[in-house]
Length: 334
Ligand SMILES: Nc1ncnc2c1ncn2[C@@H]1O[C@H](COP(=O)(O)OP(=O)(O)OP(=O)(O)O)[C@@H](O)[C@H]1O
Image (cartoon, rainbow, N blue to C red; front, top):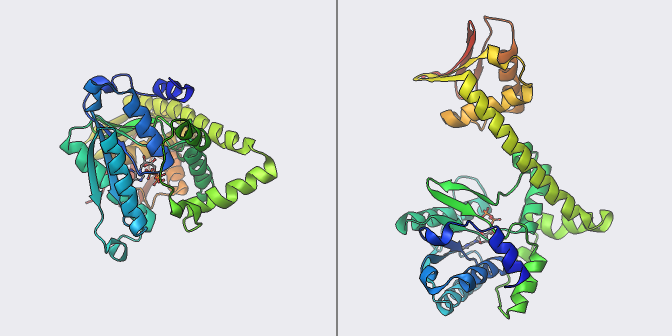
């Protein structure tokens, strides 16, 4: 087994081969072709039938998109793997709605397709080929856009995606360079995504302009620094999540109208954690968060720590917040 293959399977969920189907997302690019080869070469005939290659043809690059799909289809056939393919309708770019931009729309369609297949074949995992360079670009992109600790963590190696379905990225610690070397060593071709070479999308500008500039100006360790920062932020967020869970269990009560927070229990808690507690309450309650700014979370934290027993406030989405003796009541007004 190659060194890369060995390191790859150290990241791989141990129960996977004994479990339900595994969807492998293959675009045809070097990263996902390597992912597919690593998995297919390791699987024995009994486990091979658990792998399902999924590919979504976005039809963004004319005949090149169809050639990508044909390439993935031929590779899957050669490896004797099951496949599930879908193509976007030809006029979707003109019809794209929601003002989210082309990339986000394309992504939404791709994951909606993955979700349909996952339900159909009762998959246990979806595996994608995000790698170290993706992680570095994501961290840098989020820094530039403005992010907190949670966002700085970037892409996670594994997380729950749908109820009972995990999303796994076992190539996350491998660089694109290592992946390409591996493909060359096994004589496996791949498709080059020509849109990656253009600067049309923000992510591509980060990849093709900003990162090379930073490396030139500050040295190659820029990559390591960003990757490590992402890892540390992930660790920090895990610790924060655990503490927030403890606060939820001990200081927050749920009722039919919303939540109430026992403020006495927050007296010695750092304001940052109190804000994170409110973020978690908002998420759990499914209250709108788009208009909640840092200032709103701070206002909530101040209310929880205030001595003013008559203090009240209203948050975006008509969430009313008021003190009732020892508790801070949060409820959505009808
Ligand atoms: N058209 C596609 N069909 C199947 N899988 C795909 C397709 N495009 C991307 N993928 C999978 O997703 C991984 C990440 O691809 P890419 O970096 O282009 O996506 P992204 O939009 O940046 O990330 P995200 O998946 O988080 O949206 C690929 O390595 C591959 O596993």
